[in-house]
Image (cartoon, rainbow over all chains, first blue to last red; front, side, top):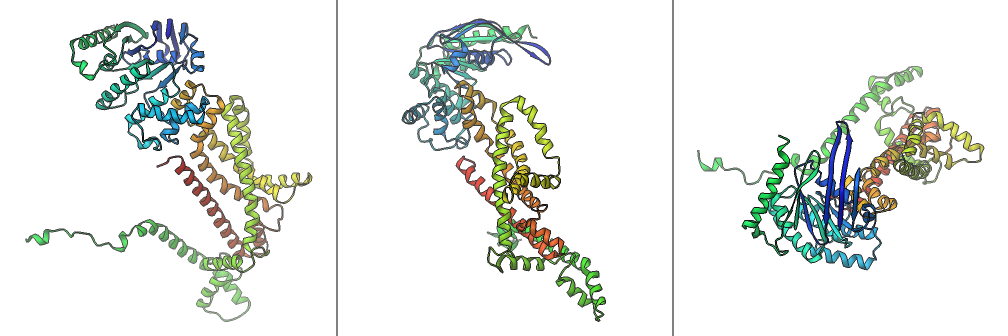
Length: 256
Length: 307
């Protein structure tokens, strides 16, 4: 699904050159749930943006969904979810969901049918006519996930989608996201700060470290697809979480 | 101490001062009354010598009370008293059929038509300019200095040139006035709409990019709706300016009709009361126009989910 070889990205800022990404190699297979974890500035968001063709790498080769990143974006291969819901405040929930569909030229009937389907998928049936400000932060983020799925892209790219929500809402949405992943069989790339979140959701965890942004460990995480929050208490879960934490600490150490 | 003296009254009596309407309108009314008082005092002071000289010229005996009464009812006072202005205003609005040349309604309609045409022209032109500026850096650099320059030349100086040039190519009457009005009012719209078109959240713009939306889709589905609050803010400024533009345009043309013509006639013949009545008409007209724009703004905002 994603094949990145030797991706590097440097910015020229006022403070000099910043190596946002250095020699990143990554392969993601179809149907995987891959989390990127690491401290701020480790390039995890940048990596996601490069895959989404929102930013271009300085060097390296990248193929997304079997084509160049640019063509993958133009071919609408992925739905992107930001940390903020970024709903359009003058559109109702229903109209927000229809926005990408309007842009992509779906028929009116098809739009209506998809709105119903994806709203029920994120448990928001009945909120069609509400405006975004009438919904809580967690509900708004669910709308933005439904919007990213509405045109049935091959991949879902999520940049700390639950970072701004409180822990209880977050747990709840993590469970819902797993359900969605299971029922839609999408490939998901997921950026997060939270170790339990990464371990709970992923099939693989990519641990990154800053200056220069690079991958320091890739951890397999093969719990069954059908997991509940209770697995967080199991020894296997804690073992993987421990390994992620060790990796993060190793990435930090040369900094101190 | 008994418990009854400690008990609070169950409900505070609703005095007049606490009535919500009083809270809302009292400041405005107080201000208006204070202005009235100052105005009357100023009218007495400014007209005093005029009236006294009048008595002396006619060699009629007079008392201070006579002079005082005279300052309130002089035919051509320096500063007419508010009741004189209002009565002349009411007279010239309701005293004649609406289309009679002495009716203020007629003159207001003449100016209003130039204002509205100018406003529409200016709004369209201003928005198109803003679109061009937003979509091209080159245009921004080449157009913006001219746009700003255009507003630095006083319109009183430009208006006669406009009229002469347009007259030479056969354009007279309503159109030159509208063009001058449009010339003045496009500016706040351009400035406001450039701000409005560039106001979308970067995340919203990136979302459009992830959906590979065309520039036209970004314009209609994101930039336009985001610009609506800015649009109404600049329309409110523009509509008053375009009224001023239409009035100013009537001055150098020696127009026979319109609020500007009334102002001009009033000042030629020292008809100060008529002059002030025409000013009052301009004020009423401009608040009415702003009121209409605000009303439309509220309706649009409600449709766009404002809370």
